[in-house]
Image (cartoon, one colour):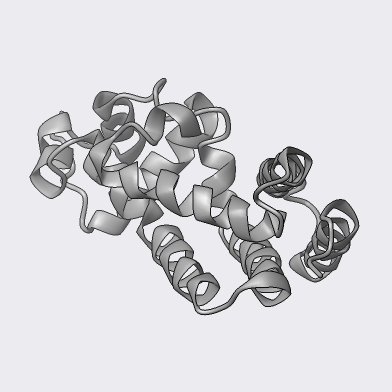
Length: 181
């Protein structure tokens, strides 16, 4: 039986996203992805150096938006930084909720990979901006819970339309975070 070579990288990326959704990143092999596409593992490796390269490409748009958010936050301070951080993260999470859902529970391990190491630093700056009062432990805890909760909600409630999810999350952010003077 002849194997089919995937026509595009997009076909492999779509198959990888489906497999990651079912088995998680760690639980998915290149062979699983190849099987989903209907090709050989060698054909997948023709397009991508390894599984990490597939994940990096799948996550590139979300990471780009996270980096842009980090730059916008850096241009503000106090209440403005908190507002930009809250609204920006909600927008990012809603837009990329499929990608977030793919990796639920695997973020800590993934942040150890070189391609994603800078995300930890961005996350720390995001928490600081959301906290508004980084010297107060309760404010930092609330900011972390808000970030984690937004991510979890976006992954869990895939059936809720964006136009309903976004305002609900923004209302939560406003209620959960201590306002900056």
